[in-house]
Amino acid sequence: ATFGSLSDRLTDTFKNLRTKGKLTPSDVDGTVREIRRALLDADVALDVVKDFTGKVRERALSDEVNKALNPAQQVVQIVNEELVGILGGQQRRLQFAKKPPTVIMLAGLQGAGKTTLAGKLGKWLAKDGHTPLLVAADLQRPNAVNQLQIVGEQAGVPVYAPEPGNGVGNPVKVAKDALKFAETKQYDTVVIDTAGRLGVDAELMKQAADIRKATEPDEVLFVIDAMIGQDAVATAKAFQDGVDFTGVVLSKLDGDARGGAALSVASITGRPIIFASTGEGLDDFEPFHPDRMASRILDLGDILTLIEQAQQAFDEEEARKVAEKFATDSFTLDDFLKQMQQLRNMGSIKKMMGMLPGAGQMKQQLDNFDEREIVRTEAIIQSMTTAERTTPKLLNGSRRLRIAKGSGTTVTEVNQLVNRFEQAAKMMKTVAKGGVPNVPGMGPI
Ligand code: GDP
Image (cartoon, rainbow, N blue to C red):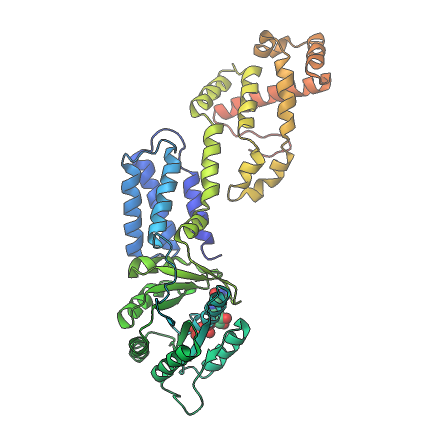
């Protein structure tokens, strides 16, 4: 999807944040640098990126402390809030006139998706109990009137088009006539489709401005194709200067474009994004919610859960102690059990791994992981005496039999556990000394 790669980049950035203690200024700088690169690569306008990262950095370094969150979560939260801000903050709904008809004018480059949007809006309004009328005031493109008529038919919404010979070539007159028509026929919303050009030009702007002046719309929606990249900012500014608009519609958000330019538009023009278009079908359209879009980009629910679980599962201090034990050969079965139990604290490891980008590659290893094994291991170790746990060499045949009985397992299972423990201890000793372990059947981990 449009923000897919931006989303992946940001998620990766957050994964590297520490979950404990305070973030150092260099942690923050590193993170901000990565965010900056991710945004620029996604085509977000430089000014917007600068402003954004500046705010994130300042807030992340300040003593803005929320006790409920760890530092990593806090940074994610700050990024989220700032992203919502870039996207316009609060949701802005379509505004209706106190006295109908409500006039909605569409403006934008040719191919931006205006005509399609007219159909989408018409259908959406009708579903909401309104009585919309679509107006064909794009008299530039040869087939535009016909296209709107087709879209109107699909949407089940009537279309006002100039009679042949009457008003042809004069979109301002068509728009004004349409308003009169709407008043007499009691249509409560009028959606005016206007002409676009492939590029911004003065004549186009003047025509749109004239239509605006003549119809005094309640909303002028600037439709912008999310795929046009960096040109989005210049185009939006040109339309703002030439026609001005009250709101933005992001179209083609279903595409594979990087989409960042579209993210800049609200912030650059100070106009809210009101709708998002996500496909060619008339139902591929929704009111825009800055907070939902930000969450979608950040995969927020997932990220926060992930950080939380990682924090619960891995106690850094504990991990350091264990590493030391490995290195000095004083790792016991009790430590082994504690490790196992910590793993279990993570809840389902599989579920957690599933939230990580790139989890697909680990799938097979994850599938081989059996949580019930931890339960069995626990039972076996708990049936051992303290001496046995500290010095596994004591475990002779009769002791193993006693342990198997006590834990409701078999001697074979007890043997397997002891072997695994010895293997793990050996392997971890290699790791602690800086080597790369090779687990039989698992490849290097
Ligand atoms: P206009 O020149 O601004 O009126 O643009 P159109 O409404 O004619 O749209 C141009 C092309 O983009 C058409 O082929 C539409 O089907 C397509 N289109 C419009 N909106 C979307 C959208 O949200 N997603 C996708 N994938 N295509 C769209």
